[in-house]
Image 1 (cartoon, rainbow over the protein chains, first blue to last red):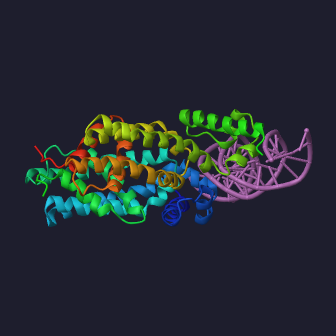
Image 2 (cartoon, rainbow over the protein chains, first blue to last red; image 1 turned 90 degrees about the horizontal axis):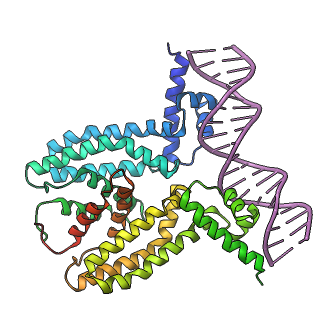
Image 3 (cartoon, chains in turn blue, orange, purple, yellow; image 1 turned 60 degrees about the vertical axis):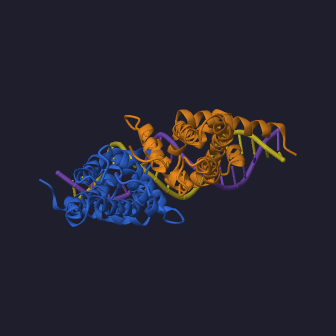
Amino acid sequence: MVRSDARENRARIVQVAREAFAEDGGVSMNQIAQRAGVGPGTLYRNFPTKEALVLVVYQHEVDQLMESVPQLLAAQPPLEALRRWTIDLVAAMRKKHGLGDALSPGAYQAIAEQAYDPVITAITQLLDAGKSDGTIRVDADPRDFLQLTGALWRAASGPEDRSASMLALILDGLSTHRHP
Amino acid sequence: MVRSDARENRARIVQVAREAFAEDGGVSMNQIAQRAGVGPGTLYRNFPTKEALVLVVYQHEVDQLMESVPQLLAAQPPLEALRRWTIDLVAAMRKKHGLGDALSPGAYQAIAEQAYDPVITAITQLLDAGKSDGTIRVDADPRDFLQLTGALWRAASGPEDRSASMLALILDGLSTHRHP
DNA sequence: ACCTGAACACCGTTCAAGT
DNA sequence: ACCTGAACACCGTTCAAGT
């Protein structure tokens, strides 16, 4: 039986963490505990590690991205759907950049691994749609596309946002049409 | 006037740091000081911040990459020279991955910024050679290429090394030839 | 069954005291 | 002019004591 205060504490911790990570990735666990009005022990009872907390906060964003795929494919051609979806993906990464700032690159890799399967599934759906109607090269690989996408959010974070032209370059490489 | 012990201390610190970062990115400043046989104060006298130390260790690797460009261009066609140079770049990034592990992503970004100009210069030289002889698209952008290259070392660090096929995809996108 | 908060081993960094 | 090493404010994490 879960006590109601326990359930409320957990909800409040997640809520506070979501806000705290968004505004500053350098928040410590003790700070989050304090802002949530609980002791550090309670925080660690719910999330045994900082990584676990970040993972939960991250999961929500990933879920939303996955759910958008069918609607995008229904509304426009596959290549355009892929373009829009990728822009959303980059925006989500950018928005949650603070999460990465809170972690060591090793833990960041762990997050990437957790999101890997669902994201690959989404990209596969988008690519397959384009392969079916002949607009995307049949040898296009979802894993390669995801990796290249990682470069986009870096480009988007730079002084000038070059992610759009980079995305165009990648999509051009994937498409079956000839270069002009 | 620099005292000889001071000069030797500095050299020993850099030497120790080079080794320590290579084998484990999680080394602390106090650990490096201890392994170099100096007090923490001496370490901080030479390198006011951990980032400064990592920057110096990193610089050497970057310098070597820059110097290799002319020889590569002299020995093979531009596109092949670019391929080999990029493989070297990824190898260097991979080898020095520990450096990134020691830092927050923010500091990692600072490192990327320090290396940015020289690396862009190198890529520009390689691309220009290909544009001159017509094997590389004239609209190929060095900055885009560098960003995409960042994805390669992640691919190289994964379970299966997919960086070669990704590099081929990128180079295919840059080349003037038509898809098969 | 759950919470609190003092405490631990560390971190990067500083600075008085020495030579 | 340079070095040492104790010390500081913090970090993520633990655990005895409470309710």
